[in-house]
Length: 232
Image (cartoon, rainbow, N blue to C red; front, side):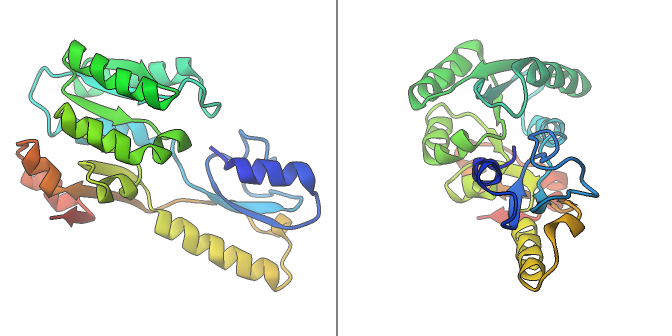
């Protein structure tokens, strides 16, 4: 989703340049179009919408046949409706031949309860959906995944650095480099209105082999070969 700070900044000024990094700025109302943002806002769109199906496919490669996958979502996330999440998840589940269950959590206590439910329904793995709240709960999520011995795929490498098994998503490094470039151009006099919104083109897969070994997972060589980084 477009960062709340950018949305808040837009509500306060129509003249001071704003360079953001985050989700779909058109859907959030920051800019009218990607090619011609107009006004005082430009930035980098880190694509989230198409990541989920790829994450499910990657996680599926690590799980025994027949095991389902739970998707942890925050129902208060305004970036995507619960109905959309469920529809996309079910469609992706059919493609990979896995049962997919949506589990909601909007608070730390609900995160605890959600993992209990995942365990009770026999989920073989978990996909944590893109949400700023879940990023603030990275250590809790990783600890719960370890406690319940559940393979989990995330979208940011910070989770893998904290001990998470796997992450796949847009490269934050690429995004912030582009933000720096745009900020420099704005400071030199270029109007944000003349700088098209940039979309992420680099996606990274990070695997934590230490966590895989702790979960007694046999990581396929084909998956290791596709990883951009392996944490050992």
